[in-house]
Image (tube, rainbow over all chains, first blue to last red; front, side, top):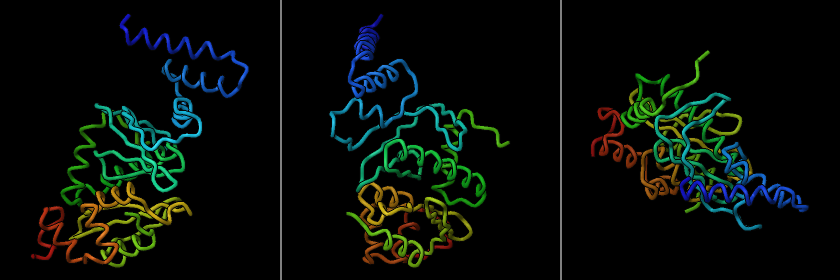
Length: 155
Length: 102
């Protein structure tokens, strides 16, 4: 086992040892961290709360996503897409330097979901307007097509 | 530099000629020049979005294909529609025959 895998196992053990802790807050935090380390789905805002000091908020988080899910449909990518979510004036803004869209929301999770919905809408618009795109949007559509490995059936 | 939502929407629609479409959560702005879709951006509904801060201003500027300071200039009336079209022409970002020459 590599040292990185050993460290991860130790972290999982430590988190799981706290699952029987009487304080429900500690228990919930330990569960979120353990689930995340085990590769199970967790809400991004819950994870942020779990790994940051109580009462502090994050200013910016960067994620690499291999899949977007919008309208309940998955879009798998050939390479991960780097997304940034940053706190603005009382809300969060999500963006990627690869695409000309952004998402907003009151939480990181909301901003990410809004981003993916907006990305899907934008992509569908580019496809619909394919013969009527100016150069930057033409290039963007070509880049999205190179990136998307599988996309949901139109049906 | 924070900008007022109302001023941004006014600049996009009235000054730069973007078409707008109302959605449930957002207002979508699209710019066509010579029959080509050149840019689109959106504003968000809700009381929290009356003042638009730096990150969001930067993203909107990127989506309308101009540097941040240029976008602020467009909203604050330091830049005109002609300035915008000239910048698009200079950078070959829109159909050239539809854009003014400098």
